[in-house]
Structures are given as C-alpha cells and as structure tokens.
Image (tube, rainbow, N blue to C red; front, side, top):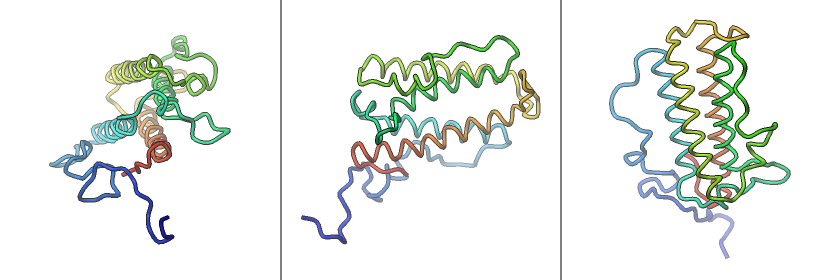
Length: 189
C-alpha cells in the first residue's frame, strides 16, 4: 500500500522529466528557431500546435478507450472531441459565406458526442472527417488574408474567426488532458 506522501505511478514516455508527456527534445510541438512573423502566421502556428496536441492525446488508444465517457452525466470522450471539432470546422465555414449553411456532419445537436461509440469504423471516420474539414476550412480561409475583412451574413472579422479556432482547440485540448489522464494516467504537458 502506498504511503500518503507517495505519488501514484503514471505512464509516460518522458525520461528526463517523468511528469511530462514527452521529453522536450522529443516533443514534435517544440521547434528550434525563431517564432513566426506576423499575426496570421502566429495564429496558424498556435492552431497547428493545438491540432497536433489533440492527435497526441488520442495516440495509442483503442476504440473503447477513445469512446470512454468522462464522468456521468457528461457525454464527453476523446472520440467525441474529435467528432465535435470536425463539426465545428464545418460550421466555421458557414461563418465565411452568405450561402446556405453546410449540413451538420452528424445530425442533431450533440450527435457528435452521442455517436462517439467504441467502433473502429467510427474512430477511423471521425479522424478522416476532422482532417477533411480542417483542410476545407483552411482552403476557404486562404482567400481571406486580410484579418480585418468582414465576412458572411454576420460580418465577422476573419481575425475573430481565427482566434476563435485557436481558443476552441485550446479549450478542448484541456479537456483531452483530463480525459487521457482518466484513461491511463498519462498527464498533459
């Protein structure tokens, strides 16, 4: 039996800093060199980092682990987050246009979380959906390099949309940290 002062054992790849997800030299989010120049490049860099973090949090888990709910009554799971962010990427494209909104990927409200079931086909589809929707949103935004440009029915500034994307991924990466720790004890970094 462990004494109260002892910390529980946690699984980690890190050897230099055992409380980290990966040693800094092995962390693919760390880069050598200067930071990006300009607001657009900085926002894109932060977004790429959070997207990579979400993928890392899902690595090495099977369909059951990815679909495992946090705590009742929550429907949140890592797989649900992947599906939710695919749905959110699609919805952001609706902000850019005055055309008819794109249909929901998964149907009714919260179907992204409710449909996150322990089935490898659902996992594979969710990852493919997220990759496709991210690429489509990136392509749609490529035509709007002026961050002050107002777009869509509501006249949202492109800057606001980009910052909101970073915020959405950052918030859900925090959720992913807690979900992953509950699955196998691996903690965030």
